[in-house]
Length: 535
Ligand code: C2O
Image 1 (cartoon, rainbow, N blue to C red):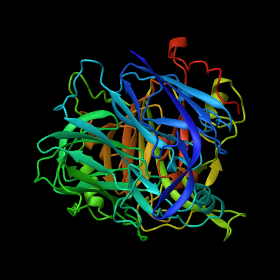
Image 2 (image 1 turned 60 degrees about the vertical axis):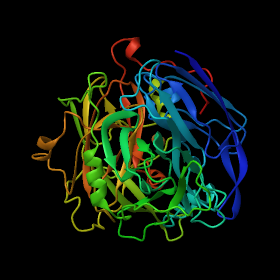
Image 3 (image 1 turned 180 degrees about the vertical axis):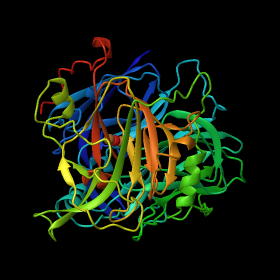
Image 4 (image 1 turned 135 degrees about the horizontal axis):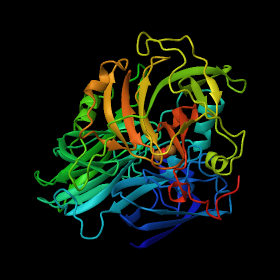
């Protein structure tokens, strides 16, 4: 095993897209930021120095950080921010994981521009469990706003204005030629006929689940969230913010230029963003004057495609990479997802949209939860987050406007070390139904079941897949439906769980699990590093 070292300088740089230039926060002046390369078993040391006038914190999304929440990164959950002029070295081991993950700022909405790929190669001498690609490429899907991030945050979270849609989607930071002034901001991947390519696709968008397809070419999904899956051949993939998907693509068509394209999946009864970002799958030697063709993407509200696609994903589950699904459950949790509105004196019309789990909108603390937990600082959080909703109702029936006001608090659940947990996430029709990509820090979980309507505890568990369910760190809870996940709480610490739509996170759609220490120091949270940013 090696030590991979990186220096991340947080600096503001002018970037222009869509005929607008604006200063954006970057790592080393790059947008998107640099790729982290490591091998399974390596130690990674990333020194982050903050030269910008914003507080910073970086999350290594999907890295398990065993006993080492200090390196996880969500601001005020595992650490206080790195202030201007200060540095913090994220120091972690990559144990038992290989594949595509990613990193992003985890404070305010700065991940709009502060993000990059993490590529973890299998151990030396261990091949991929699929045909070796000729070459690989990272495909980072994102969003671009002409306005600056601070204005966006203010609009949604201070003034209580409705969501501000991005001005473009992007592929590797570039919107592609269907947008104004974007001919020069088009990503192209050069391919040779007959060869196979591994695309590492990452959804780094702030608020949009996305479809992605390549004109004329099918893709074979081989890995999701850095876990191998049974090969799945498809014309389009669905990918939620936070998720990663590796696909194999064979350049098996007539030499030409083909668009790769991405567009929103959002099944809500309001106008959705249907702008299409494009990049080019470019056969070697074909002149740039050839006009590329567009792929057919599912319609923005194609929930049927979304459900079917997700249901087809299965863990590879071979002896070398078993799906270790917990069969017996020690702790059952049932969380309902609601939208609502709370009084807001600073807002334009006196209320602000909120979002809640079990009717609780999470309030960010002033001291990082992990520090409060480790040093036994009282008064920072409460451990009485309810295991089920206060009053059951018909969650997905006719739209409900009653009960819109949510309770607020920094409330979390305490979980016994090494216990097995089942969590059912149930969408509700409070204000409206919507799909929510839920991300759990510090763990992968198995997605054992999903369905439309209300979860039925008498019938649905019998239909669970306990053999080869997909194992992920982020899962889409379907519009007006539910998703059941299981995991073993073997990683002590404080682990954030939230909707990966930044807008909803800001509205309070988040909580945390405090997983208790196990028996003895080797099963307990490690001591904090000396350079941990002070609160
Ligand atoms: Cu990718 Cu809590 O984040």
